[in-house]
Amino acid sequence: MMYFQRGNNMIHVVSAGESVDSIANAYSVPVDNLIFDNQLEYPYSLTIGQALLIPADRKYVYINGYAYPFIEQDVLEEALDYLTTVSVFSYGFTPEGELISPTISDEKIINISVQHGVKPILTLTPLDSEGRFNNNLIHRLLISENGVTNLINNTLATVVEKDYYGVDVDFEYIMREDRDLFTEFVAELTRIMNENGYTVSVALAPKTSAEQPGLLYEGKDYGGLGAAANSVLLMTYEWGYTYSEPRAVAPVNLVRKVIEYALTEIDASKIDMGIPNYGYDWPLPYEKGVTKATTIGNIEAIRLAIRYGAEVKYDETAQTPFFNYEDDSAVMHEVWFEDARSIQAKLEMIEEFNLRGAGIWQIMRPFRPGWMQLERMYGIRK
Image 1 (cartoon, one colour):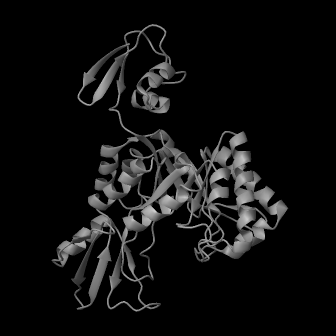
Image 2 (cartoon, rainbow, N blue to C red; image 1 turned 90 degrees about the vertical axis):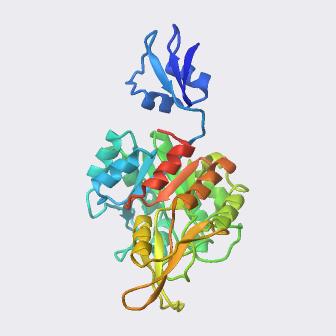
Image 3 (cartoon, rainbow, N blue to C red; image 1 turned 180 degrees about the vertical axis):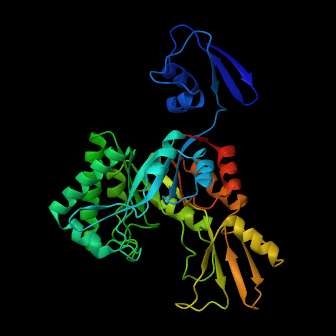
């Protein structure tokens, strides 16, 4: 085997009898990445003396980004360099199992993703006409054997027709009584999809124990869903949210507790950690049930701090930046958002717990420092 060191990377020179599989195995790198990084074309034939780039030895991770079909093309294209998959948000359904397409066509985002070597994923959600998760719709579907069968068949047909790579199931606020039916649905969906060459992931609310009370948690069986699906996304964000008191969206100390519990139920190789790509701006004083925060981008947050001369502080426990400012109407505000430090703190847990990767909610706002941190720390599976 002949190779040359070039900085942190290796260059392998192909010898007689070698293949992409044997070379990938020799360097312990994913064969898909070897193919992608060197622009090899199917059937991936090699010739003696051909030089192949072998990136520096590092952990390769799966990175998914959620996006709506109306994402700006330049924002999407920048993000695609750092993604394995992109989950298109979202397809709905009726109680009878009829699939409801996004109001804006998903063809453009699918085509651009495929052109950049990123696999598009169909996201399935039980959203109502007002954009809220409807657990009554979930219940009506799950108790109908015909409805479940129709939904699976219709989803498969759409995946095949539109060249999706798989399905992401994002059902939230499932009623406790529907817990086992939901697990059975995911298991059957996965069986059918896998038989046809497609994958299934399922989004999990951020639980810290098996019997954690609350509508967000009681309908999700971590162990059952982890066994049923090909992978899971831990939705480790929204501690700080629109109607909460001002706080970090994804405090690292609480994210850690969710991961630690998940690992007691699900193999690490199936787990993706959720990472938020946004923050919130709360007007003060906070009044429970009345105060409503505004979603804010990470770059937008810094520009706001600069505009009002605010000092950005860093909470060492949550490992998240925040600041306070007084607006032009003399109203005080508190802002929590993400920066390069908080993103790094979250990404470090992927390696610490040997997780499969991460899912970014969502990639509609560009945040280049986050992508650069990711690229510095990991290789991206393609």
